Amino acid sequence: MERVKKFIEALEKEGIDAALVCNVEYSSRPTTMYLSGFTGSLSFLVITKENQFIITDSRYFEQAKQQTFFTLIEHRGLNVYDTITNVLQTVKPQTIGLEFSRVSHEMYIKLTERYPAVYKPIDHIVERMRMVKEPQEIENIKRAIHISEEALIQTLPLVKDGVTEKDIAAELEYRMKKLGADGIAFETIVISGPRTALPHGRASDRRIRMNEPILFDFGAKYNGYCADITRTFYLGKPDEEFLKIYNTVLEAQTLALEKGNGRMSGKELDSIARAHIVNKGFGECFGHGLGHGLGLEVHEAPRVNQSNESILPVGAVVTIEPGIYIEGKFGVRIEEDVVIREDCLERLTHLERKLQVL
Image (cartoon, rainbow, N blue to C red; front, side):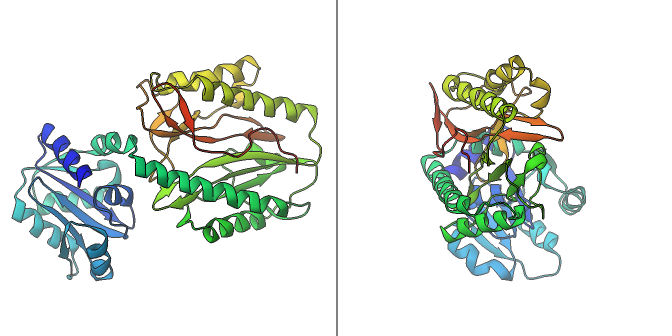
């Protein structure tokens, strides 16, 4: 597999003999899936130039045989660390790469006690590879987006005075699954009225009322890849204050979509939208970054914010999601998913961005 070949080449450049990818209760499923294709909840990948092994238990023996070309090592004992140690002793690496951000301290101690070696972080290697999406990865994201958008279109007629946020969230998730989603990419956000000022508020038992905004932040997952879309609607007649803020967010996003390209940093792209919001007097009400990478995880590299001074890689998929949040009143956020191209941002989302009154 070409990905594994590139991964091994990157390991060799850093003097790492073997990589150990530890996936416990899905802790590293994105990396495991990216490199091997395996999607189960428990696995340990041991990757060297000569051998690629996958260790898993009896729940997943047949699944591993179907999903991956890695050599299956069946774990049948009570202590999986014994099985890992036995495999490592067959390849005898002196330097082992770990995703330090996904390995608990307890696991690290147990590994190093059983197999003493030099352990080095490989998070940056995995992150760098996963940032740039292959054509098929982008197609999977497109499909996840299409499912999400169609599900929202089917759900909007159900938004009525008196319906709870939880009811609408459940209907939206049901429709995403009916349309072919593997599941949801993250917990669906449906919030209304003053609760729209909570950037990541959860759907509650609050009943939606006339003459107030409703914010949806949601996404389907398809073949392991995520969509992430936000739209803010209004049930009834919006007042002038709401229209002013909505249009400010829309204008800021439009500027970023029109001016963004693969020759600028995450900070520079963030600044395009942020400067407009600041100039309109709402800078203190836009507290998060403009966006983030999107793929096997809903939040991954690269970041589109003031701390990322690295050039955004061509082929990365990111979100563009400016927002303004007025505490105690309401919030507005609009979110698009785009591919970074050399000269532009290619939009993957197709829902209307102008304010829709329900």
